[in-house]
Image (tube, rainbow, N blue to C red; front, side, top):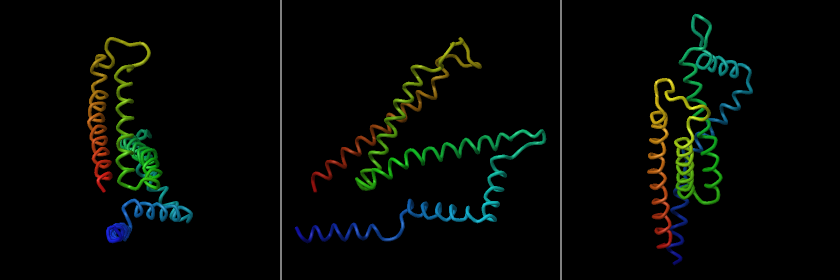
Length: 171
């Protein structure tokens, strides 16, 4: 019994050597934050931001590339902020493996519910027979695909949670 406990402690200690990817990302963000306090670096960061997200064409309008880049950045930051915060809080209390499984199940369960609501209630308001060339069913096809994909991933995470619990009970 004592040897088994010692082996588990050594295994945990071995896993703690070096920085994880999340810790490396945190260090990089700290460096960027510290650099943002230096006026010259802040100017370079501002110029890079303007060059990508505020690019204008000959008429003075913001280009389609800049609009798409903003949308991609907003999507990535929102996923990291909302899903990552939940994972971070769970990982401090449950460990990274169980936190990952719970976060995945919760995220895809939420996506199933959101997609289902969109399928049932979209489009809202006055419902024209044709909306920019799409009928009422064609508007819902992306939401149905998202719902089915999220449901499959939700059930995969739930099955993985079940296997994790059974493996934990055997030890």
